[in-house]
Image (cartoon, rainbow, N blue to C red):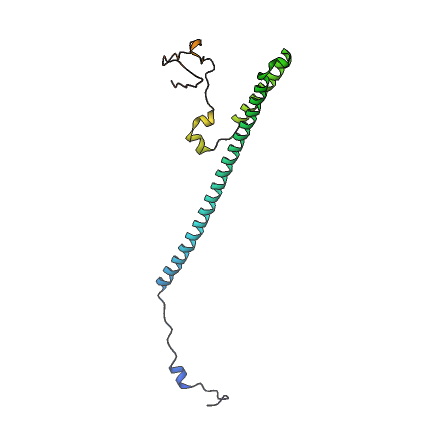
Length: 169
């Protein structure tokens, strides 16, 4: 046999192997398995991304809340220091000056209080401690010394020091 012969070899045609026929249902099952694996990976990645966004939003909310609270504490300490310096020697001011300075400190404290009320409390923190969201309740009418007859009208006890009692009806 040479290169220029046109006749095919008889052994090649007889030895042609028959094609394997694949089971179509097996192929479909394999494709479905691959599809579900890819779908699971996509859903899992989306869930991780969503959780990460939730976590960063939560951290940001806590960070901004606690920064606002710390700023209010620092400003309130500044007002307290100013009040303490005024009360340490009130004679160096005239009555109208002292009244004006006390009014300025009172206005500053009211502004701090209003700013604290506008703070956005994170949901989880609000549910854990409602006093954080509403602020503490103080009974300013209650005397604190025994000599002032600091008798608690509900319990009948004598209050020895400044304390806050909240009664719920």
